[in-house]
Length: 250
Image (cartoon, rainbow, N blue to C red; front, top):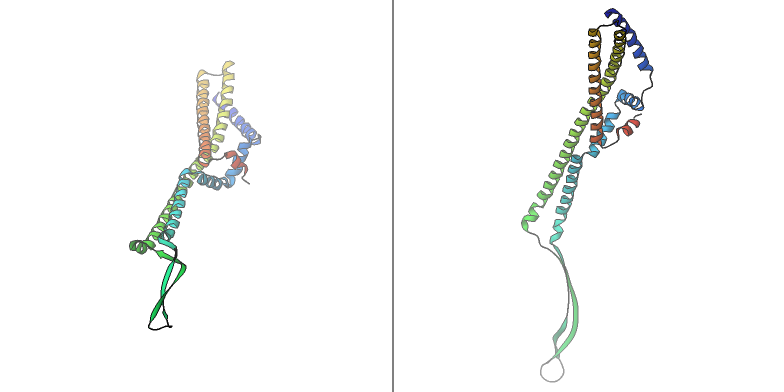
């Protein structure tokens, strides 16, 4: 009986493998096979994840902030500049000698005049003048530090995407393998069950193949769940429709 099941199992496995190879795959399977062949999908996922990352965006705004602060501090010297303008109008008196007559006489003359006064002044604390260069340098250091933090955040996102992608890739292969095992276990179980109904099998035999099928089913569902989880994780971290990215793979 065991020899019979073994021979039938080998035959059915060959038939099943041939059927699986020739079967029409789903659009998702076809896209995944093409994407995993070249791993062209991975750089696309990393790029999307970095652009979508809230942490990278937050630090990017910090870089912009310190750039604005640097511009403000560079232009702060103009706060001490002042432009003064005034207009004066009045009567001016002047003494003029009179050459006629006897003695020396002096005549007073007056004239109405008006004039403008303009000027530019600079008033800044001496410490501010001395430290201006240091303030600008400190701003530049803050910008460099923020840029470094942004790069660190982008690197973390990249590493996270790579980890999830590798799990996604592995889980897809495990789903295929466990799916074949599940189908073979089901066929084998149906054969043993048929023999049992026809009183050609034993309780021990059907119990054994049922246990194998149950384990194969649990294994398959486990890998399907892991595959779906990694699929959703990639969509969550990239903020994109993964199917759309897969369709862009050449």
